[in-house]
Image 1 (cartoon, rainbow, N blue to C red):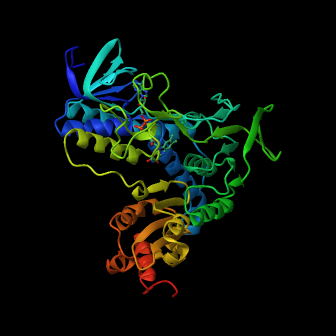
Image 2: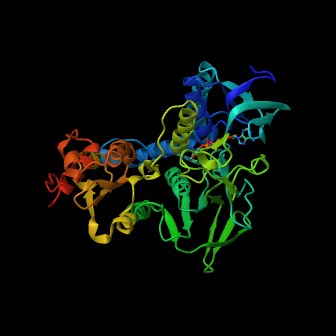
Image 3: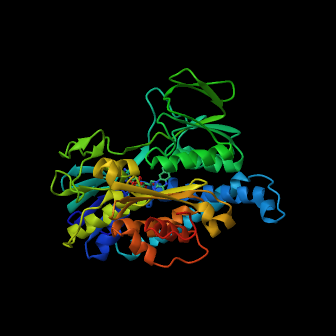
Length: 462
Ligand SMILES: Cc1cc2nc3c(=O)[nH]c(=O)nc-3n(C[C@H](O)[C@H](O)[C@H](O)COP(=O)(O)OP(=O)(O)OC[C@H]3O[C@@H](n4cnc5c(N)ncnc54)[C@H](O)[C@@H]3O)c2cc1C
């Protein structure tokens, strides 16, 4: 550790996940003297227990599906099964490569990295390993952990969270996934590809309930086709152990049994016992409250990432961390437009979106001022080659900009980059239609959808 008791850092960061380390890297780049305190591994949830491991599992699942379906493409291959230790080896190899890279970055930017469990001890200091680390400013970035429901105890064996699911030593014969949000549908998708019998329980009306209803319905259709079962619109009541698994009962008395129950009902902030309230930081149900510049009510304290009540996404954490570093370094910063954050659910098929749903647009602009257009991927050559079905739905303010792009289909997450430029640059359909999209790509489907919305459809009906 490169500091002594007299060092006063420009910025002391508590938590080295996406939000904390992004602030550290950007702050150091801008010449701030930064201390980063992490009790576990830099990279946090996303790198070690979230984005990266889940996407590795989903990719392994995709390969399993491709082996099963190879005959359709004239390729002779047989699917023999999943070698779980080998899948973990592949997944852990990806994580450790990225982890080493990140550790190298932190060291090369000359961030003072302190390993240990920290606690906010004043508005300008964090105590860790019996030492007081002083800063002109403190950034709280302690992230989140899996939540459960009242009376539902996660035992790590038959009733598990995403943390346990990522290190499970077998493919469960059957699983109930409690929660049809992003994490729930991603595990349901990967496990189904691995050969499990899956049932998702979602209390709201749809899977992926935060997405445009059209995307949810397309996902449900695709999951039904894949044999992924789901029960929508009724809430969980209780879970009990059976001789060899778990039985879940819903509020209407309906029962489901499986080998394991994955609880994917959301994540809660890590803030209890860390001194936040004692130092006067305003909180709401464990979340730290911030303004649009990520400032708490205490002038020397900011907070970012899953700890604050904004979208729980790694790239949101990055953006919020960068915003804080730039603000403290005296750069001009602008608040984040959270509707403009791209969102991808990496199940098979993928669901990707940016901007607002048709329903929200109608609420904001009035039903008669909103135009929606659906482009079916059946007309897209590359999607046909990949044998994926889905749609791109555009939501436009009448005679104005595109305010929502909602996509379903394998690999459509990769298209969210252009979609976010369209939304964030407030593009008109005719402006996007003017841009040439490469043929045959799935990206072309975005171009075609805008051609259609601009009144000059090419490979779609008028
Ligand atoms: C299964 C799963 C899949 C996901 N997939 C995606 C995805 O595909 N794309 C996406 O964008 N997001 C995804 N996410 C969400 C993403 O992981 C989070 O939004 C992101 O990690 C939040 O970053 P953070 O820095 O706020 O918190 P975290 O990443 O949780 O980091 C907080 C860090 O603080 C440390 N810490 C906590 N308390 C202390 C303390 N007292 N002292 C020292 N250190 C402390 C923790 O050890 C941790 O490393 C996924 C999450 C899960 C669980």
